[in-house]
Length: 195
Image (cartoon, rainbow, N blue to C red; front, side):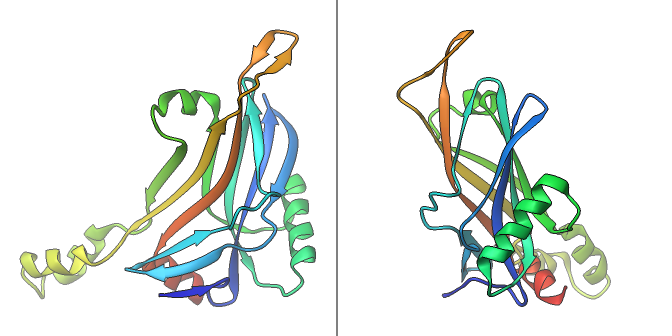
């Protein structure tokens, strides 16, 4: 098992945009890139209790949480400023490895869990079957593909705040979001290294 902050020439940052209805309220970026622990065909990316990467949401608010692939820069403060500028004006391009949409409606569906989790396939295994089917029996192809991880998943932790917020419409529940994490399969790690 190895721990690093980069994959080839790239780092991964967590960032968010917070909206009230369709109006952008604020943005945030993790203080440092993710720490990446590689094990069992996956890279587990996390930030350690980052106070700057946290936000609250109430009833009429929503957020987008981004996991950005960013070229490594030893000047982390400058890097963060560039990412914040990108979040406001979208003029500099960073690749979004994953995006989580967050709103209170999702939380109401999440009974007995304090995590919003999203997953997607990054590699269709049927391509492997097509390539190998003329050369190998299906049992062997099944065995080979069972070792290939093809799912990227991202999560963010939330907690209901004890004291609701007083608004002109009455009391509004508030939730605190923090600790984003990302699981990326070896396939994605290799694609990042090659880019």
